[in-house]
Length: 342
Image (cartoon, rainbow, N blue to C red; front, side, top):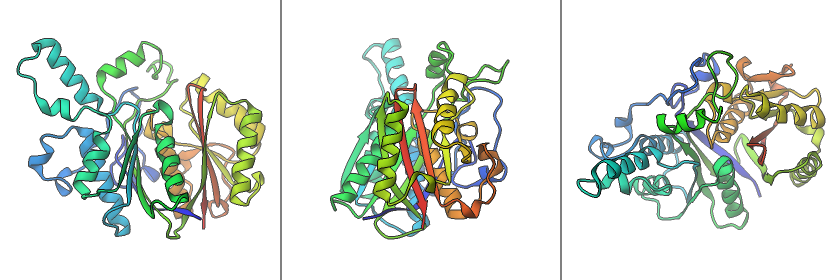
């Protein structure tokens, strides 16, 4: 049984719903950046859009675009991963309650503040009455959604699925994390750049260029644990560890964060080309979705953008047929996703 990526779409701190980032990425020097919005009138009735927060409009635009690319109509399932959910609406509702008590509160903020609102709004828009689920697992939210989808495919429950990662970053939440030295300081240029995520993948059993070979999620693993998981994943895919042509890691220029990837690459993939994406798309709880998005682009187009090379240069993009995506959250939750070109 195979699961293939038929299409994908993104809205981020790069130009939305396109791949301009591969040729001329927008470089951010400041530590906080919000997503570049697209023209939502192409996807959503302006009257309906007035009642939607940015994250909901992005989700519908990304879903519609991903389906349009491959000519699909309605998926069998919609599965979303989100770390913060509709935090902007949540903040607005709580701020209004604090300032005004329980009087004159706008119900739209409350209705659109729950985490599963994202999947629900996509389903309503697409008129999809199938399986609908949301995973809120902090830094492995997207990977959890992907794993759920793969299990549905494996059991024959679905033939197609929309799997997405969505997160927004408000100024208030940015400041809270900034107090913990989570973000880049302009003086030294080290640390992560805050980003926003809106990535959608249309997955299908029908064969296509890029296949998802498997995914694993591990909690506080040792290097031996990582090695065993990788060997099992490769065995299930019918390949060996040496068949992996490139590793895409979640490095973000923060010293403590990147040290984990340095150890991983040197121990298990010495000399293998290492790619990265967070310096272009930013850091968020569901940023692993961008890692899979970039890997899909590289395999599908047989080109490696120079900005994506972290260490060990790529001799020939044509020779890259299998990419391992490795991401971790606070060095506690670790995830592996293996893609291959068919």
